[in-house]
Amino acid sequence: MGMMKTEAPLDEKAIIAAAEKALADIAAVRGEVSKVIFGQESVVENTLLAVLSGGHALLVGVPGLAKTKLVTTLGEVLGLASNRIQFTPDLMPSDILGSEVMDQDDSGRRSFRFVKGPVFAQLLMADEINRASPRTQSALLQSMQEYHITVAGHRYDLPAPFHVLATQNPLEQEGTYPLPEAQLDRFLLQVDVHYPELAAERQILLETTGISETTPQAILNAERLVEIQTLIRQMPVSDKVVDAILALVRSARPGQGNAATDKNVAWGPGPRAGQAMMLCARARALYEGRLAPSIDDVHALAEPVLQHRMALTFAARAEGMSVRDVIEGLVKQAKG
View 1 (cartoon, rainbow, N blue to C red):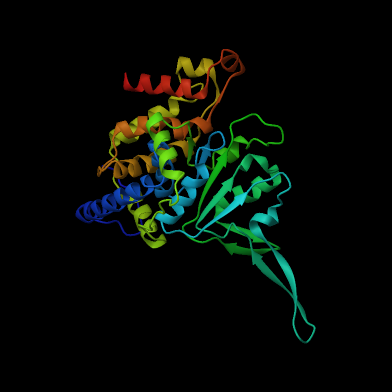
View 2 (spheres, rainbow, N blue to C red):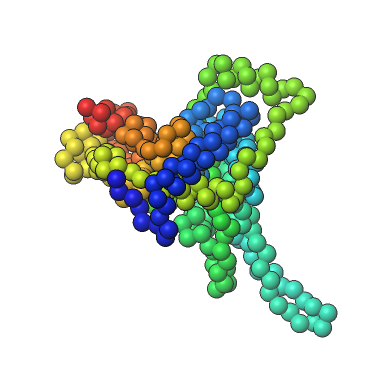
């Protein structure tokens, strides 16, 4: 069993004890979120996996599917200080990062003071990220990658933990700027949000149109979340699972001997996809109530991990194929 090197590796008994406590906490988080968000189990799961793994998630779906509500609910349940930015075409980088203002004291001396922008939060909701100009998008994406910002030559560290949950409409609308590929890669997972099932939609109608709405309670706080994130990085991953991750990620790259991929994929996922899979497979094991990740976790995570990290050839798109079809085919091959 290969373990990641950490500053103070826990022994196996301590890891199991800590993991069992984390299992209980994560189960409580799931229960609390389900009081407010009906149905959408895979959306809730994948969004939580991204946060538990210490990463950012991109939620893609048509308007009105409770993407924003999910993020605000997670902020409350995880006990994180959250902010929301509604992206618009005229939004400037300083609207996100903050800006320097000039102060004048009683004696007339002037000095600059930095006023922090909404990016200084533990959970940042970036609503409709594809509506802002590339310049503004890149200001946010740099902070996602580096966990600090630089304004007028001064470095300001962002709070820890720092998570961005961005939403994006898949509709081809005028006035949107699709995120460049290198910036999509910054998101640990892409979570597709579909229309609710009939039973869940019935529950939505009944529960949300009365006088009182359920408000979620905080289950964790920022310190406890960081503890769980650290634990996830210490969970052992068997060689069998590591091999499955490598085989899947590499099979999605053209030129690696996979005939279907060579035919349909223009470019495939880089090493970040494997890193995302290593972290999320551990988090998914805990989420599902297990102490070790399995090959099933790898297959279940293939779509959210890979779909925003690869592109189809023109010919494949012309035939009406989607990235999801290609990933489904690769998972079927992997299962043999």
